[in-house]
Image (cartoon, rainbow, N blue to C red; front, side):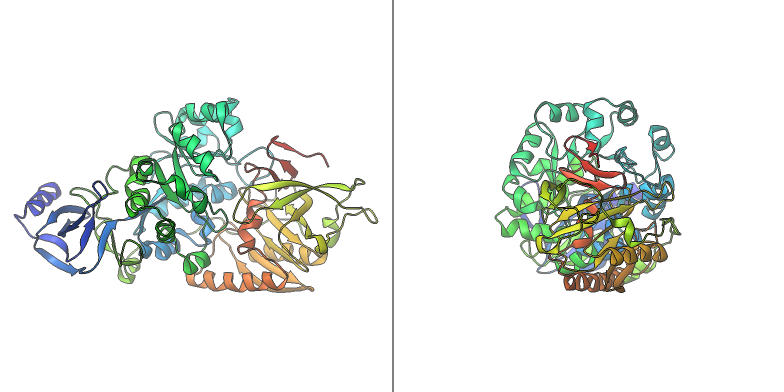
Length: 564
């Protein structure tokens, strides 16, 4: 018999199933019923639910069986580990499918970065779906290491991991019909196009959706989410290490809206995953805040599958992929057993995976800087200041009086006004832009990073110019990463040599180094829970209201660089 006939025979009970999960209760996401029955598995598919015999029988007595979780939008690079370590980090938590946008590495290495993720996807236990990056660079107000146009995207289309076009961040390019944006949208006409339009509303939102964009993860308020839902967008609730929108959007997620809402993490690092969790944490949190388990688990699997056209998963039902999570309880959402495509997720399964050589080594080609490079000239006291909103990647556009002294506006720890700088690191032009930020709480020293969305130049913030220079220059020696410096010494660091974004070490190693970095940053006075990713997003000029790139301070609402 071929695979189809074998599956039918096992589903009917004419032949023993390859595997049977016995003694658990299946949570049906259509009716909301709990079904006490065996689950029969044939190869990578579910054969049936009922009474079955199997060649292998796994006792799941006392467990609740739910479909594998689907993270509908993330950047694996923001986990700071390779796709292989990301797989090992989150798949045991029940995340069996992840839909990624590799635009972080693509902004550094171009198509080579996308191809790296496509190749890696073929060796993982989880099903990693690789959307094609739509905005490399995200705008014309930054210097990135690569540029990808519609003709370039054609070269990487058609891979088995593909779903469609990744988050279209250049929403002004869409609504004002920029030719390059139109070329990419036409290339994916009829396919899936993922959205990114923070705070867009009214006729502008109508125009954006009319372009064929159907999913969006940037809603930060219930009002914004409801408008997008009413206009046919599927809203992805995001809870990352910095962008924490779950509490604000939780009231919108009901059994009525759940078919049109999904869950995503966007950017979440191993330390946050270890301390809190991944999608499992989101599910627990939603239920704690009053969301019905049916709505929460639908958003985590069935609704996600439907939103992205993955018709072969999202339910425990005959013929679908055997992506199954055995939980302690719906409310606890702690995975006790995970099956991914019918394979048990354990150390033995991870050991059988193939490997792909990393790309993007030696990608940090920044100029050596000195303390003088961070001076901020200007003869006006009134100064544009980036105002951090913890738990948000949106910022405030503040104005503060900072009196020049000896031709320089200096940091003022007493008012929490710190110097921030972005240094071009791709070897293109050596740009250095400086500005001010409020919200870190730094009293001394500096922190620096090459994780700097989305261009991934060097971002550094600090109270002392010499320490800022030390930290920035150390990043070149490390091939990228995170650094904390104070008093002329490096206090903590994490090398990220893969494109300046990912470690070659295990996620456990990265988690330990992140804990050291967080402790060192707190020693400087930093009050933010996640200072490095918060710093990274201060350089993303598609998120309101005030940001900074290597070309200067950016008024995102006007979509223009502020004159110095």
